[in-house]
Image (cartoon, rainbow, N blue to C red):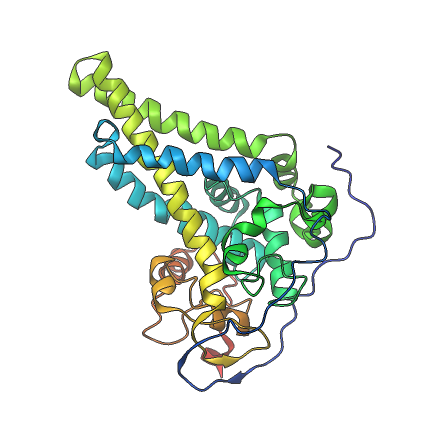
Length: 330
């Protein structure tokens, strides 16, 4: 796959308009129906790496229901992984840092967080960023890659199963992420299956760590194999599936159900449940109203763990130029 970038490219306009406050109240926004994006390849073509990979990881995660693959250490790693890989890798890095540039981090930290994001199996940073920038530019209109106004399942994960011309390879989506791809680190992640090797490496790490601990504490090879598999099933597969559905629920649920603080020109909603289980991403109407802001919870009750993490990093000097919501600075 060629990775040569043309000289002239068009980047997604991330300028924002001031939006008016909305009246409070929980509501649904599912009455309008959209066709699939025009960039969906016609006739429909299955995107096999997702159509096979997503069910496969779900099946592997279901091994957690068998007692042989259970360990409390594995459960603890799965829960911790939701924060380490989901909150740090996706929420903080892929979304608030790379997509919206709501803060600045040193390259060693930015790249480390990006690797955590790759370990969630949500595609490369550049592809994820491109998808999300297109979503904001055309939110809940036909070009939106994953509006639930097509169907709820489409907005949740169905859109990943079909080929879209905007995301066939880096030569298509680089026009939305030229700023990112100037960094050779992100271009290397686009070459071949580097992103997949990173995920496979995380699987090997969890298994070998568990194998070593199980063998040393259990005194047998069988104990090592069992404990290694338990850490891999829970710490990788269960955590991956949970992280997927957390991210996908932001794309689907928060464009259908919830309340609005701001009158945006799309169907974005703040959803309390998604806001809590996603560590802040579910305050989606706030985010669409003020996209660059690194804080998505704008009121005291809108708990945002990702923002708390960013503030902690800012306090110790690891990030800077943190963008606050406009409503906080008026």
